[in-house]
Length: 270
Image 1 (cartoon, rainbow, N blue to C red):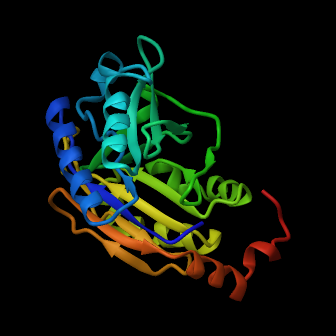
Image 2: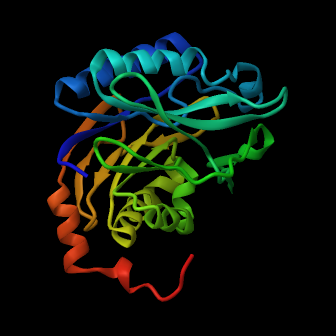
């Protein structure tokens, strides 16, 4: 890993694909202007609407959205994690897929969300992603010029075994694009992000959506960058499209791992 600046982009996506891409582009351009070499977009940043419509709006990868972000990464000369795209699987299902691009626009990695969100909080939120989405199966960690980067998406955050697998694959940075709900996010978002950073001694870059969405509830916002000690380096508010940056230090990561080598002290393997 080397020292560099990273950015988490926060936005609120709707049904207007072109408008969503315009906002993502504006925020990515501003983040790159602020010196970010790695920019993380939120989950389903390009289209968000009624769940029953998802299979009909899903697209192939490569496809229009991934090609657009590839070209944006190349134009800005940065790494961009296309938070997640609804990737066509069948007439009734789609994958929720992160696509990671290098500064030349080349695809470096692709990750299909493994854990499908299901929640029922009476009067606040009701979601069952398995109604329209298929689950991925592969754990993805990729070597880049910036360091080893592990991929995950939103609800994955609640499953520490995935992040321990990424640690086993020598992840130094883990990205978490999300559309984390406000009812759960108010109490769980920050503790879970900090826990995943602390227990795996890695940087976490979490880009979340914010505000009311078309599903009848709100997303939490508070996009965040956390260091391997669990220190919050940057945090957005709960409202408004924005981007937050932080400097990631290889020295800091190795210092934490050297001073408290807990990953080397494990007795039970995952």
